[in-house]
Image 1 (cartoon, one colour):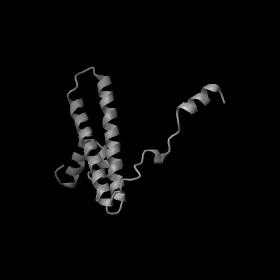
Image 2: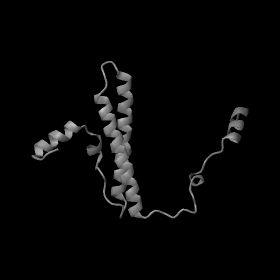
Image 3: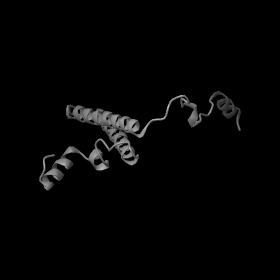
Length: 122
């Protein structure tokens, strides 16, 4: 091992998963966990919608901005979907706020055409 590696190891201590936990805090009930996950999903949905609104107002030639917004939108969708998936799979935590990956990640027109095919409003 080089001297640089030894020094870095001495300065940067490795974290264990228990390092951040507050041992005095009570555990969450499934209902509390469901509320937390629904809040995460709700905030992710707001970010998702916000980026869509910002992209709709971009002018021509703003490719970088659109790329950033698309990346933020995709991350929000994935976070929201993951929260919904977890909420659905934890007994007593309630149900998903928005649904499966298809509901989270497919564009609005996809849902519009699906609803039209089923004869319901989107």
